Amino acid sequence: MHSFWVPEFLFKRDVIPGIPEDNPGRKFEITTLDRTGTFAGRCAELCGVDHSRMLFSVKLVPQAEFDQYIATHQAGSAQ
Image 1 (tube, rainbow, N blue to C red):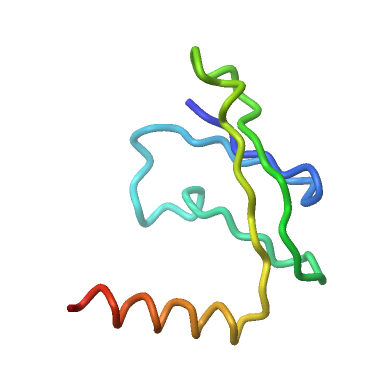
Image 2 (tube, rainbow, N blue to C red):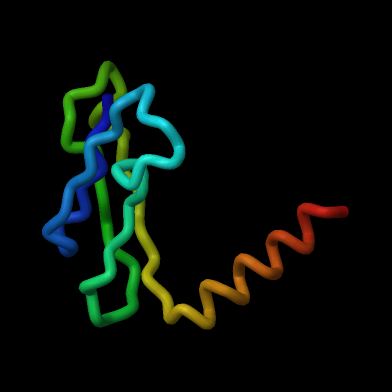
């Protein structure tokens, strides 16, 4: 089990194996943050030997920039 935590978001999401894909609890969506930027995150659940290495970052961008990123990467994956 993991628990993805981004302190700046004041939000933590537990990742539990076996939750169906259509369950809203599988999404890590933040809709209340009103600024862009890159935010540090970490696993907040003691998940194993490499727990201390479970570091990541989340980049918040405007919706139009995200849509362009998705369109570009989907087009590239079709080749």
